[in-house]
Image (cartoon, rainbow, N blue to C red; front, side, top):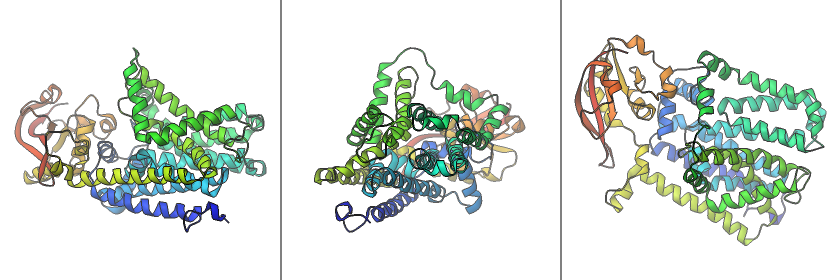
Length: 509
């Protein structure tokens, strides 16, 4: 039972963690109901229209979940389809607590869970939106929990094949969620090589059985890639390639990830992670943790942080600051253990203040995304990033008014995976949606364009130039004419005024 000094107000650390999970779940579900699909979410919804063994951008698990929820509920409401992902992050928060409690103390587990939820990236993107990161992190943490029981505890000695087999199953599900799981394998391998106590496992059959189990779970991805000339492996691997060095991209990646992770949380976490590496696989850091446990988390955490930061130097990683997230998750657990040992007024002010600040910022951001109140308060011509969360409902109304969904041999087309993602919820599977672009990604595998030969189409182009369509589209039809310019509104204010609707006849792939 927790001592008086380890209590969180009137609660034990476990009770406080459950309260944290309950409150954040409700708040995230309110946000899930209030705002529209983000760019990535709309694209994933569109991708999930057709069930495949795997997909071009990523492994299939998150898209299978979206497909199953839509089939089971018959609904495409944002809060319905986001609910499993919000729930998965709630489970992840509980797993963070369990790891922190296992290694340090119940209070260390609570502080680790609080830090993760005080991080903007985890609280908003991973914890609230329909993305592959939610299942990936849940199964990543579950794998770490089992590995701790094997490598730090004694469970692996009693029933090695059972425990390693469970680790392999969870690792396979991590791989089935996102390719990031390779860093989980790499970090664990580094720990086994460097820790003399754990090194004998390399000569045991059980860990290799675990890898075989993981490979079996991951086999749908391998099969799909084999059928598509290794399309997904080639695409993701190619993103790490580049030519000239761009130091500005490296700096952008550094400040971007720190901003997403909250600087006053991320920078100390990196410091604690570095000290855990220095302490080594037999060291005890923070004091009181089982020997080597901090190094295990550091070995798992550092590879994705270093790799995705450094690769920005020669490859265009754009604004993918979330790629380092699993690494920071491990280091935040280390920081939670340290905070519990130092549990003084400054520590509590720092952690609770961070959580409250994040709550206030996200409340302002989500409420504006839903209502557009900041437009009223701060009028002027400024770029609003939350406009990317708007439903293109007016497009759906325009298509329905023209009877598009009742016309035979008709499809809807747009010009790239981002635009197609925004169009998809308005079509909602009532007509085929063709992505007529060299960069269609997942959507290239959803529609057989040859089968649409001779069909007519409604073409949606986001452009301020009326009558200007990409050559690829103009050449694909016998005729094409502009119908109207559609404005997308929020709170009675037109936020997007560049959605062009065309009618095209005689498709020729």
